[in-house]
Image 1 (cartoon, rainbow, N blue to C red):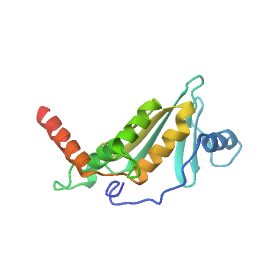
Image 2 (cartoon, rainbow, N blue to C red):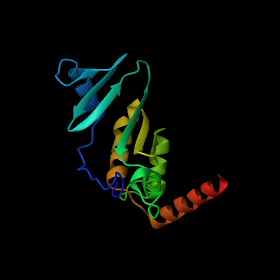
Image 3 (cartoon, one colour):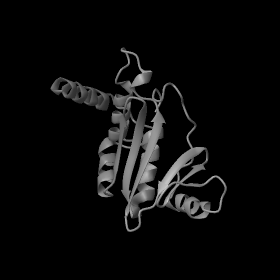
Length: 169
């Protein structure tokens, strides 16, 4: 997301698929650079991205969280909340290549979720998918993150929701 991560931008990487992630995980045990953390958790790099993977036997849900260096400590009083607003609008509005209703219907039809949040020193983009729908959800997630719609109506709605939440607190 442009503007998030303290002004740092990253080059997009090709979208992973279930097969490519599983292949890396299954083959990585003998490869140099793989660190076993605890109880089935491994740490390794894929195309310059640090990955921590934990396989949970019998679980048919895949959760992905992308942590971005950023957060409120990068912002001045004039730009406070911009990261949270941008992430919320991007993940709820979907990619520029789809209508918002088509995006939300596609995510819901797969039983998936795509969301984001911002904290003091990092931001998070996340997705959750039932295993058979991982590839389709990942494609929507990747497109949403790399090409968000940022419709004026979505920005206005999210701004009003945020202000109501602040007033309520």
